[in-house]
Image (cartoon, rainbow, N blue to C red; front, side):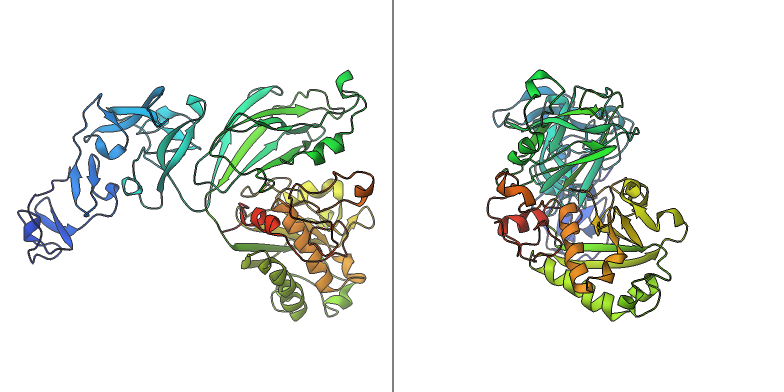
Length: 506
């Protein structure tokens, strides 16, 4: 236990000098346990049962068992500030009191339930200290409002990382009709939910999504033949009409919030109905696995991780200097570094995003994936090994014939190693396209992975709603998200906002 000596600062004792009070130490130090030491910036530097005041001095907490508390630092040594239940104060925050610590994991440790945490609070897959101010939190975390799933989304103030992403799993026990809560802290920029099932013949995803405010913001498109109520309805019309864009898919799907600035991210707990579905749209039998990703900060750097399958003796190798295109050549060749990456860099600069770390890797042990049939794309994308950034795979060819690139829309940002963790580019495109044109195509797929949709679909004349949910993107072919591979590179303000919220950025 630390002992803080009282007294007015102003002495000349340096670090390590013996002291009887703060007055014996220089003004930048404090007296702890009879020794001059650095002032605190955060409470955990002082030890269990201490606060760090505004002047940087460690102060012993006085809260006793049963006393009301709002922060871990108000409870005496051996106690922690734990949420009482579902009751809230006048500000709508959950009530808490000083309670004996659990003999369990410290703040920041992974957890599945409260009892696994020393402080008695497990949220977003980690042990969380309650707080009143960021000064109460450990280094690398900040005080923010967090929805508590166990209290139906009621808010408490706790310490979470203010940068990067928080990733955790949400348990699901039933194939259909289960509703989960996805907590979104008030500091979050975006939330991604990844649904997976082992049976690739079944689809998986959300049936419905209800916002923290209680509005139903998504309902799965109704398919003819599933029930009489669906007969005559066009599922695609329902899909394009919703501001929150999502579609259950075979084996895996992704829900990203927000899909549009017109439906802003709300702090609180989103209620998501989770199900598997058979091919005909009826209830499935596979139990979904759910991973949630909350992006906490505004980031501007996009890392790209290029992977090269065996491209030796490629019929289009005149486009890459008549030599083999692989990690070594791509990392130095001007056609890749200047024409290709330079063009991608220019495109994303228009969205306020800069390219960050670029890596190059050869994949030599998957000859079966060198020429890729799209139905096998999941086996290749599962090799994606980066939580941040996007994995980009170059293959000899993509089939069916005419397919130049392939990727999920949106992708599982922040989750590596899934059947959708990356995008695929067919190198045979270079037989009739330039590196600059391939760069635009690649940027288009990267933007889809990050949550943008086609600004307009080919069939819009017959179906006016078949366009993206972002109000300020027009139908121009000059837009990066125009459906044709021969499109432009422009982005609207709304499109730029969605891009900068993606969890792939750092």
